[in-house]
Image (cartoon, rainbow, N blue to C red; front, side):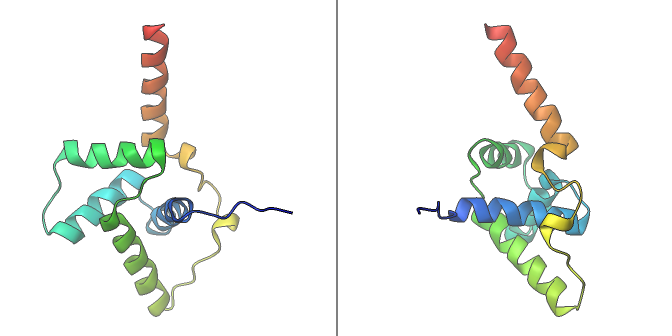
Length: 115
């Protein structure tokens, strides 16, 4: 039998969702925190939105987000925080995030208006 091997994009996206739920922030807010941690300044809204849309549509996770996610999870582990498995956490699906639902609804409305 052949099994599909998980790509790094799939595991990165899963870690982003998991870290956002652990920190109790939205995924977009996680992108803001990661940008500030990596570059040392607050990111411009347009560049954050571009990176976030690429993440939503294609599952592409920027390196600065991957670094922040891995560092955050490692610090939580070192601090002895109990991190339950992602499958047992309610509401971790990316569509359940309010910002994601609004963006998807907007894209759907644009698609309907262009037909």
